[in-house]
Image 1 (cartoon, one colour):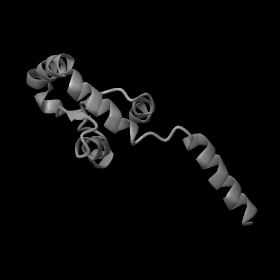
Image 2 (image 1 turned 180 degrees about the vertical axis):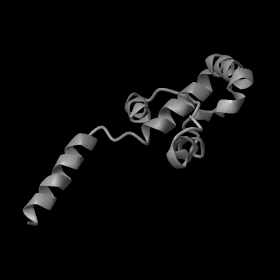
Image 3 (image 1 turned 60 degrees about the horizontal axis):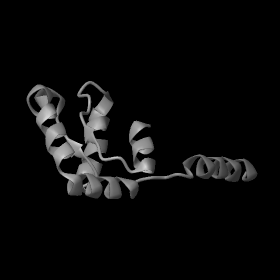
Length: 95
């Protein structure tokens, strides 16, 4: 949910996915963004060494923040709730 919210407002993000979730889905979701230059990834086991330097680098790089913000917006689904409701009603109508 957090990624969805950040995408809607176009915030540049550094993601630190938990390795303790089912089927490593946080990492897979993060990589979907990273592969499209929409986020920065720091692995949990590297966070003590790499997170603060990544924050400082991103803070100093306005162009990268702009790029990440623009790219993450492409993942936004601002009307997701209405789309889900519409699909539920379609299923109900098929009965």
